[in-house]
Image 1: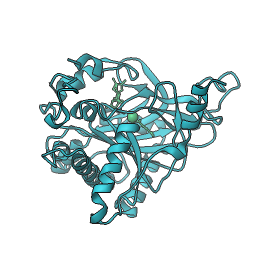
Image 2: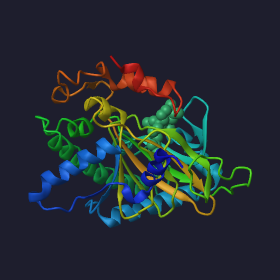
Image 3: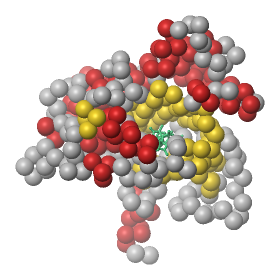
Length: 332
Ligand SMILES: C=C1C[C@]23C[C@@]1(O)CC[C@H]2[C@@]12CC[C@H](O)[C@@](C)(C(=O)O1)[C@H]2[C@@H]3C(=O)O
Ligand SMILES: O=C(O)CCC(=O)C(=O)O
Ligand SMILES: [Fe+2]
């Protein structure tokens, strides 16, 4: 075996993935900030423990998600205008063994204002709305906490340079529930996916990076998520329902001038169990101008990307397929 193969195998172990403990005392704040920056540079991905999101909020979210996906297909399809999708991902021919509910977080506040138009997702739509609203509020706070620590760790002058973008009332953040039903792996499919773990083989969601600033992800106790911090290496992420997982998105790559890399990831379906995940994609408002922070540009590290609005970038994202590289188009 060549030395590089050894190194690849050694690095493809989940144990090596960074874990950030947010319970640390204020004295250790700068150390936590430093570790988060390191994780974003090396992996664009990390796990957060002692995150402070109350258990009852997480448990209720899991319950409404489970109830929704357990409904008959015909009932779920009635939620298509509200973002229900099955197997089709995006608009350009991507498919996966997944069903999902995907909507802008703003939708809930609009629905709240128009009580005559409740969201018919749950038998009790008011319950669905209030459970999801509380969950979104809690994970947005977690995202802001992490983004403020990133700003500190990067010695950025404006400590809320990142978090203010997703705190904006016009923020275009998204919320997504995913359900990957068990898919039996035929011997023909077995090991068809390079480096996948043995009890999974079909693609739930194909290789992609998240286009927004930061993603806060949580799942049940079923595996499937894999990340690829280096080209050709796939690391399965052990599921941990008590934790949150954080992905660096494309916009954070641009704002940090490529110091952070938006992590490539995919989900493989499990042959025995259903995986359920919940993702919050923190994004700026559509008209926000995304630029590289001046602190990230030096004479030896000139600015890599031209400025653009999130609306412009989102249009590009939706014109392309999951795996397509979009940031290349915004290079100077
Ligand atoms: C094929 C696509 C689905 C996606 C939009 C896109 O055209 C390319 C990016 C995809 C992605 C990946 C991360 C998130 O799950 C998502 C909601 C996003 O913002 O970009 C999805 C989009 C989607 O499923 O609509
Ligand atoms: O289900 C997961 O763990 C990841 C989902 C994901 O990558 C996405 O929804 O963009
Ligand atoms: Fe993703």
